[in-house]
Amino acid sequence: MAKNKSVSIVIPCYNEEKNINRMFDELLDFIKTRSSEFEIIAVNDGSTDDTWNVISKYAKKHKEIKGINLMGNFGQSCAYQAGFDLSKGEHILTINADLETSTSHLSKVIKYLNEGYDFVNTNRVGRWGKVQRKISSAGANTIASWISGIKIKDLGSGMKGFRRVIIENIKLYGEMHRFLPALAHLYGAKTIEFDVDFKDRDYGESYYKGHKRTIKVALDFVTLAFLLRFAKKPFSAMPGRLFGFTGAIVTGLGGLACLYLFVLKLMGQSIGGRPLLILAVLLVIVGVQSMMMGMIGELLMRTYFESSSRTTYVIREIV
Image (cartoon, rainbow, N blue to C red; front, side, top):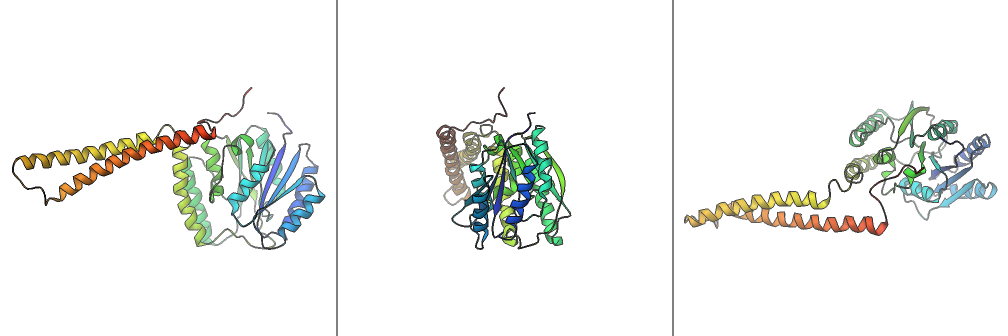
């Protein structure tokens, strides 16, 4: 694979005024030793401290640094997406502003990308935290691996590397940044993961934790399962097939029940007070609605792909 490809480094920031300046200094020292073209994109996600002033100061002084100041606190996923949208590098790297993972590991991320890997993940060894958090994180990693089919030890590591083709086909909504490895795997990305040392942050605290976060992650797993099932091969389970088949079965069962009641009526039996009559009518109505929902889904799917010029495939490269 060709070496010395341009690199974009995206850093989401929220109340990191005492960390982001040290991160900039380390990154500037790092890129001095590299021959590739670099850009550092720091995204201020509505910080309430002096984070943006620090970013702005460095951006005005160093041409390699670009600052994005979001109007409010939109969340880490939106911060990542803003950085991805502005990035121009052939390789896109992410790193947290808290310095919990040393910037020295970036060279290994770039090395793997240059060797042909599409996605590089890092596993934080010796990660701090209470036993409860360790168990919940391990459980989340296990569930995500089971759903997506990708064997990843650390979904939440901030240091990652992507080829541009992967980033161009990923759009982050809600808080789906946690599942970037699974989303990359969705398009058949060639993936590798390696261990990195973990160091507790010197200043501030993490703002992405708590019981609400656990609930959000649990709900996001449902979305992840849906995306991975239908987004990779959207026409293998088209709405018309899914809802149409289900609707046909339900309608058929309702029709059989109606036929049975009709025969009983011909035999002179009363069917007006039978619960089966209500169930039969309900099955027919639900079945017809399901089939109509499938038809509407077909129109929405075709409108989505044709109006957005998206394709149902991803090209790795053309020679």
